[in-house]
Every structure is written in structure tokens, then in C-alpha cells.
Length: 540
Image (tube, rainbow, N blue to C red):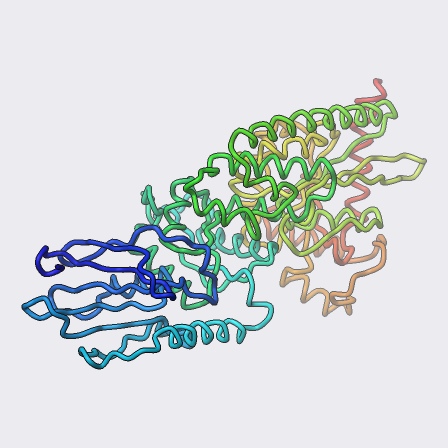
């Protein structure tokens, strides 16, 4: 029949020998329909094998082999025919479980009469070898294996793509995602369907399959249609930068307010992706990109999502009123307020710990702090201030997150002074400073007086040498800072000059971890906050 109609004909057969689909293509290709994804996993095959005709006597082509890999088919067989339409040869292939270099194994041509029984046993053996190869990976590298994809403009606008990709790696580290490989492409116009173009995407997916990857992470925000299309092609979970950040927020939110903000952001983001046909949606409702306070609610319909969003917004308004009452009480007590801001992982929580001898969570991870943490600092003459740590800022913060966490940053509106903590050891620190200043401006907070704190100077080469020459403690955390602890004024003056920092500006160089420079900061803080307080609370 295939020869008579001049079109390829194929069948998909399950492991019981039942034909699940009959396919009719063109003279040189055949289109495989959307297949159910419930069976497939990293160590399993789909449970279907494809047998179809080739009209021109050719062996398996690249499209056949790509379909075998992308769809994780049990087996792929092409039948070639003689001039009468009778089979005169079979070309077969299956996935290669042991090798990352050769993704598939193409078998020698077989002829009628050479086929034997036992295909099911062979398929089960291949699947067993796939499972064993996954087990051979190191324990820390077995789960959440990710391939990172970044697509950036051809001309640099802002920071370099490599810096953006490094930040994505840090986000993955925080989310406990093991990065296996990365891909960076420079192009000004994104493919509206697949971002990269189908050919390049398939190339990346084949690499991902070879490396046992179960997660594609894009360094941009995907549209719902792009996420669905890529997931259809990839047959593995696909998330974008926004979902990764939401996942980290979900892990780190501890207070009632923080948990509600995370759930609200998740629901608003996923609302446009809640469609019955969106298979990627089912992949997002658990694990990386789908965890969190509201993860059991993310599979409900759009109407119920809207209802839940409304309830969350009402409850958050109630919590906002309570915060306003607390802030008014602090103002009534005439306690000056200081807010700590900065790029994520700049060392804000470590800095607050060093200042107050408290134990606020501080980790070398992005977004380790999400809920505002408030402490008191007492100066001589029984004078006190309130000082608050806040969620870290980040480049291109997605609108869903920016809006949701404005409430988290509301504390800053009543600050008499802001302390901008900068990770001076990060090569990208100037762009990070610009990102923070931009967000402060968007939040209408740029008018508040500010002290800049350049943190982590102990990681600079200059002070590594200084520590050795001055028999420093090295990298052991010092006791509470003393006036003489750390590099002297001359060394600090020289570093400020090297970095182009104005000596007359309200700026301090510190190492919160080592305790260096904290006494200088405290003196400057006391001087600035009480000069402001006198004008605010004690009119002359």
C-alpha cells in the first residue's frame, strides 16, 4: 500500500504488540503525533516502537534517529521495499545506554527471514542498562541535572552574557540544581516559537539526553506558548529564570507574609499557563520550578486560581495594616530606622550579624534572606536605632516578583537612612550597584540618604597580601570588631583610590566575615543617623 499511494506508512506498537497509532506521511518523511509522557523518565523508555516504510531504499536518516532520541522510543525500524512493494530489508536502531558520545546504536541491515523473536527482552535489557548508567552517577549529581540555555542580543547592552550565565549558575546552586552543561547564543531576534529555532533546540536536547539531563533552564522569561512548544519537542522539564527564582523564594520564605507573597507570585505567573493541553504545566507542579507554599494548589483551574489570588491579596492587605501599625509605633517611640539593601548574596545578613551579634541566616547563596529581619543597635548615651535586613535585589527582576515583594520592601519607606551593601569582590559589582539603584528608584526610595558599604574586601588580592604581611588570622572569623582590627586607614585610603571611590562620600570598606572596618561603619552610622534624627525629631 505504501508504494501504491507513494507515501510512508508507519505504526506505533506497544510492548504487548498492540498497534496504538497508524501514521501516514509524505514520500520522504512521517510525522509522529503528540505522545503521552506519563511513562518516560530519565531511566525509562516510552514503551512504544515505531516501524515505518522508506520508499527510496534508504537507511535510517538523521530525522529518524532524532525522533528516536527525543521521544525515547523503544526501537525504531525502517522497512525498505522492492519494486513490487514487498519488504526486502530492515534498518533498526535503539538508544545507546552506556555512551555519551554515541547516543544511538544503528544495527546492520537485516533481510526477510533473518528477523527473530525476543524483541521485548532486548528492549527490557536496554532499559535496564539505562537505569544502571544513571545509578553510576555520583549521588550529588543524580537529581535535578540541568542544561542552561542563554540567548542574548548580539550587541552588549548592560552586562556581558557570561556574567548573566554565571548568575544563573548561582541561582541553580541555591535551588540545588546540578548544572551539567551550558549553551550561549547571540541573536537579536528570538524565534517566536522555540526561542532558538527548532534545529538548534533539537541539537541542545540531544546533548541533554546524552548527559542524562532532566531539566532545561532558560535565562529569560518564556511565554506560555514557547514553554509548551519547547517541552513538546524536548520531552523533558522546561523552566525559565522566573520559575527558578520563584522556587528559591518558596524554599526560603519562612514568615506567614513571605509565604503568602511567594504563593501569590507563583499563581500570577502560572495563571496564563494553566491550560488542559499544556503538558509542560503538569511538569511544573512539583519539584524545581513548582515547589512552595502553594504547590498543591497550582493544578486547579483558572477560575479557582483567580479566587485564590483574590483571597491572598485580601490577607496580604490585612498583614500590611499590621506592619503599618508597628511602624507607627516605632516612629512614636522616636527610634530612627535603618534599612540594609543590596544585590543578592552581597553579604547583607552576614553584615547584620556582625553588627548586632545576632544569628540571622547567612549563606553563600542567592536569596538566602527573603523575610525582613529587624534588630536593634544601641549606641552610647542609651541611644538606639532599628536596623532591618531585606530581600536581595537582582538584575531584571521579573514583574511578578517585583510587584509581589514591594510589600516586603515597604519597611524601607520609613527608613531614615539606607545602607547599600556591595560585594566589592564581584567583577560585576558596578552593574549590580546600578541594578539596586534602579529598583530603589522604581520603588521611589532613591531620595533617602544612603551609606555605601563595600563588603568582602578580604577577598581582594590586595588584602590577601595584607593579611599575610600583618600576620592576620587569615580567614578565621574574628571576634567582635575592635577599633584596631583590620587594615589601617592608609591601606583603606589606597584601596578607595584604586577603586575610584570618593574619599569624601559616605562610603566604608569592610569585611563583615572578618570584622574589618565595622567600627568605622558604626561611627559613621551614629554620626549620620543622629544628625538626621535631630532634624527629624528635635527641631532646632
